[in-house]
Image 1 (cartoon, one colour):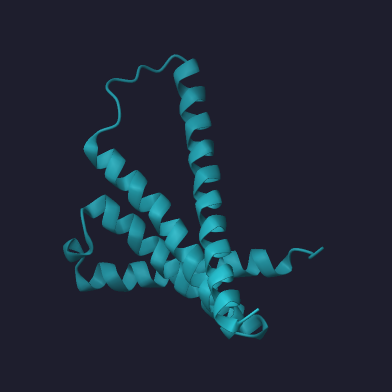
Image 2: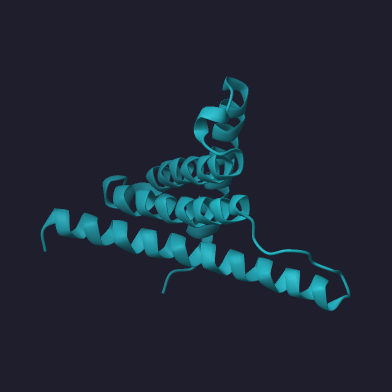
Length: 137
């Protein structure tokens, strides 16, 4: 198989893994909400347009981060390369969530951008650490 095809396959697999991760995280949120509702809490109204926008950016952010990690995975050999890929994926994911919450990246000031970049790197490195320490079949 050609390198381009291998890279495309890796990117698509990464995007699907990111989408799957977002789906699991959302399922956990739904279960938590059901527990609260079953505990007697009253919920008024449904999802607002802001909630739906955040949901789309959340899922899109994890999918885009997975795509990015998968796309560069074959290009970055060794553990250091994998950590770099996850760090950039973390940045993409955090900025997507913040963009969904704030209504766009233009709403961020410079300090927020630096903080979000730092958080993205930290989350990405933590994800890389967790991923790389798992035993492989």
